[in-house]
Length: 502
Image (cartoon, rainbow, N blue to C red; front, side, top):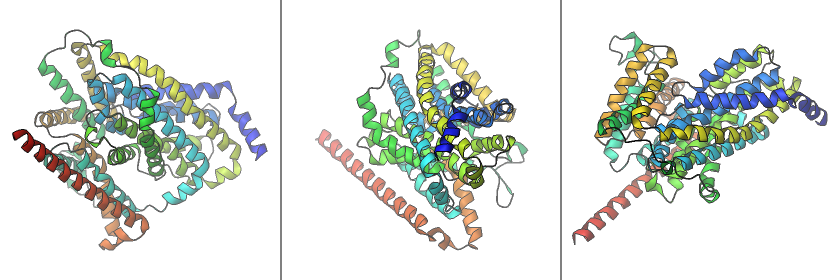
């Protein structure tokens, strides 16, 4: 063990390694903050530069981009309601309302601190529990995924706003649009109306940009331009240690949710962020403030999002199975350098694994430093007058929608979703249920149908083990609590009305 650690230090302790981690986090933060420039795209763009590097250096560069990208999406999500990454779409729910209240700097600080804590917890979990969590992740099949997603969907009632009917309507619209394209089981087309561009479904990035950014641009434009720039006081002060302490429980909870879901191949950051947000709301004393600018909501979303970063490396290193699209690209980097992740990697290249662990831990501290610098730079966005800011944002939206597939049709999708989003804004229909349903809908359908194929149509497969049963119990409890809170809120509202009337 001592010899392996000594050799690992020799591999890791070099100026080049320290530089590439910082450069990677910086590149990732910038890419994550640009709508349409997704983190997988950033990692893929940087990959060719690692070919001539030593294996440890090259992989650490990619990991730096990965971690920076996960955090970077929160910057524009909070400041201009345009999530840079899909996982940051949950941060919008409370981050942007805080910016509108003049608390942008506070929201940015909490997002950064939560991201760093979650990233550190995820990294430590990777180092200590790689084998255990990888074994647990292998127990998840389609039925387990399905029950997990059903449980995650209960958050819709929590973010539906004052009208549950409008929230359910929004979610149904999201589920319907999630089915557009080819059926993955039988290959039949659905809702494409003869347009082959729709065969692959509606791409998430154009839908996301259209739903969040364009309605804001249209709404602000119809109100008339703002005179001059925002006052510096509108950025607000930074978050205090006491404020961060209040969110710490949600951050730690969200971090472990991210670790568990990140260790399961194929889940990703967005479901982890929404589940973390749901649990934070469920356990918070300020439930009613969620979605209106709650600091705890920002913290929970970013903790769940960044908690997956180290955890997605668990199935990759322990089993050789990539946890998401990004780790699939990183798997390619391993193979280019003649390395095959899995149990053999720990047997034949243990010092290199230890060197990667050291670099991964260091990346959390780089994220804090570079994030602080990024906040100072990006927070100036809030000082730009609307007449200058919104045309720039619109150009970025068009570029972001086009950059995903280099396809003009995606710009059309973005514009259509912008109109849908604006109508929802005017009719006071919440966007959050639509977004949650659109993200989780395909996972829900695919795992449901795969489960039925495995069981020859028998529904008993959904209670086949303790994992499934546990998620059903949690779902039932969640629905019970939500219904009870709705009834109590309704009674309180009626009582206050009668008192006022009297």
